[in-house]
Amino acid sequence: MSRDIAVFRRLADRSRHARVSTVAVLLCFSSRAIAQAAPAAGLDSTLAVRIDTLIDLPTAVQRALAASPIIVASEGYVRSAQSEQRVATGAYMPSLAATSSLYRSNVTLAPVPGSLPSSYSAGLASSIDVFTGGRRSADRDRANANAKAAEVSDISQRFAVTLAAQRAFYDNLRASDLVDVARARIAQAERGFRSAQSRIRAGTTTKSDELRARLELTSGEQQLVAALDTLQTTAYALGRLVGANGPVGAKRSSTEEPHALALSDSEIVRLAVETSPTVRTAQANEEAMRALTKSARATYVPGLRVTGGYNWANQTTLAGAVRPGWSVAVGSSYPLFNGFQREDAVTRADVSAEVAHATALDATRQARAEAARLLAGLRFSERNIALAGEAVRAAQEDLRVQSERYQAGIATELDHLTSQLAVTQAQLGLVAARFNYLITRAQLEALVGRTL
Image (cartoon, rainbow, N blue to C red):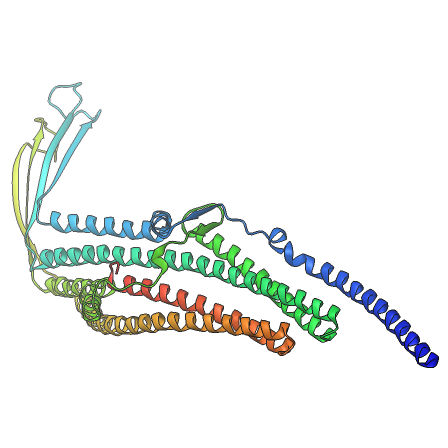
């Protein structure tokens, strides 16, 4: 009996020493782990993202249109085309010019000795083309077509800038969502890391579980750093686009959520074919090229021009001096041969008209195909958002179950980490699905030239 008591005492002493050693080792590892995990808590403060102001989507689009050099150039093209219209209309009006001259000389030619001969004159001259063989009407048609093309192109450029602003705005929203996903991953990884530490202290797991949890926490921190960098980059890009001198952030609203289109699919395809800015621009260019062909062919017809005017002048004896009175002249010109310049002009105009016609037809086909593609892509994006939401909910539920199993010692750390990664991937998929939906809808509105 005394021998058994002695044996039990030696075992108790060994167990007590082992517990002391284990506690010391765990404290060492815990202090080291806490020191390593400290940067995760202060990561947002050390890598703070600078955002000067937040704007909503309508404000972003309005400011982008006001600051875009493309819109300034497009409006300049419209004014230039309108000026060309005035010139084409002015060709139907007579031109008017005023002339004046004063002549004085010390050469004595007058009958009275010592007198200085002098003369002055003033006059008005006018001219008008009576017949141009259809050139003026062709030039006017071409000017009208160019003005129409410039106006439609201005609309197209406005929707292009609007699309660029929407893309930059949604890029910033997506970057903000990626930051949220990375922070959620870090928070979950920190909980897993603390759980692994607790299990090590309880002696129910191995050091490998703690290392895997630490690796997951580090991966989450790296994802957060990349997401913060993307957020800052998109903020500066949005700021430049809206005319700001610093980074600008996107403010969320309910318009980012999927909602039904204002028109049916068939109506949207019809609008894309009939009223799309791209199609209308191509058709206006085709009209301008046809008018250019008529203008080039008009050089084969002789033109008729009437000129007239009235002169006021003093009576002088100078030879060749202007005499007062009125004058009228009718003239015609027709180049019999000018080195094939007329033929070259007609050939170039015909080629341009053929190219413009083919371009207009291709623009119509492209608008129809692009509208159908974007509508299908929009439906796929809507369905993908729903599936991605279901995937997130399923992954989160799986993580909850695996966390409970891990705490109960049924699941391994690898199972737990796999569920955590599945949640992160599902959340990233949901962010991508929402971004694709927003961009696809913006592209469809830019194609048809109106909001949907």
